[in-house]
Image 1 (tube, rainbow, N blue to C red):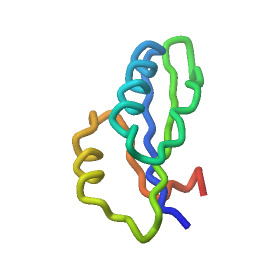
Image 2: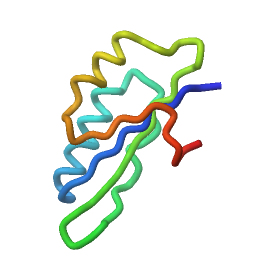
Image 3: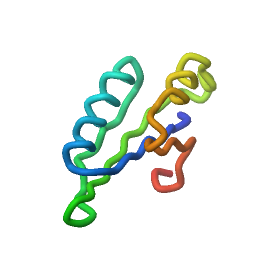
Length: 85
């Protein structure tokens, strides 16, 4: 069984793609699912998300929490998000 940490972000197509690369790099040492392909919301806005899976007996992790706190404020972080459960 795992705890899930949801990450979501939105913006222009370029901004979302750039943030996706950053997320992949920042969390490459975790069990990262995604980032998913970006979905176009309207003419100028795109949205995407990713999930970090952590075994229940390994959460919380101080180093991972520190990295999550250092993320850009526009990245939504949720623990065990409802849309994934």
